[in-house]
Image (cartoon, rainbow, N blue to C red; front, side, top):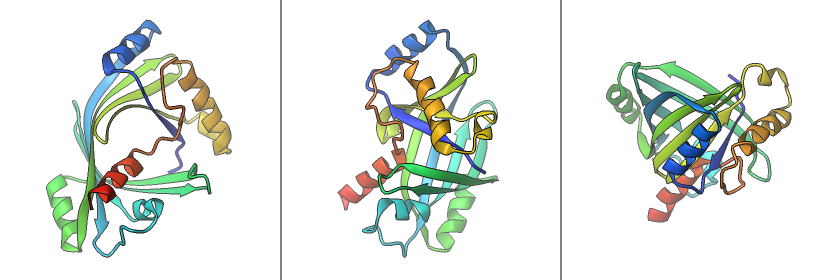
Length: 195
């Protein structure tokens, strides 16, 4: 399934961001806790390119809210020479148990490479829906925005990203000015630094 999204790192504290959003008439419509387990086969060489490593990962996702969900996910992202996402697809399968799925993957020599844990807050104002992600690993505050079905009618991903970028810019938050922050790359680099 095709998707286009942007993620920015916020250089302000959580309470300040929420106050700014609420002052711009954004309303909290949902909040949830999410934990991703990035699993990879033991035979993958971790000294290779980070993007190649992540292409070989499966994610086990645990979402806890009023309607808890668990998924096994594969993300296939294609990058250009400047490490910008050219296209991405995601395959998702519902699962019943995080532990049973981990155990099954471990039986065929997969291991947990790293975990990403966050508390997410979904805010909406008219046609703009964003997710404020307060992440504990890698520690940081991020905002993610995904293209709507209507925006995806445009088949040029760069044009869709330009629309999303305009929406993010209206928030008037202090950011790193990188609209394609890759949290998984940050977490993977932290794993590599420890070795």
